[in-house]
Image (cartoon, rainbow, N blue to C red; front, side, top):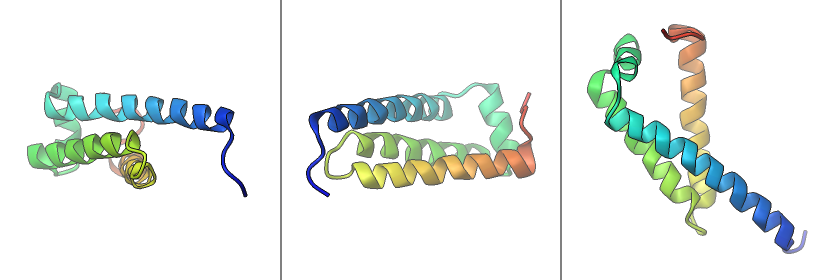
Length: 98
């Protein structure tokens, strides 16, 4: 495997920016959240501290995704966070939280 082409780099950056945007919005809602966000974490018995911890993890993941040397770690951290959310929805919360 050689060096990635310019096209591959551009596509990679597009996906990194999309993932960073999604994680940033999710982190913002955890920090300055609405009632639904609080209700979700109350159902998970995590409360405000758990909600803010997940928000910090999402923000850290978003920052790592746009850093060249840390983008792989940011992707893994974001993947772990999203898998946790998926498991929470499939086991405790259900698909429709409202």
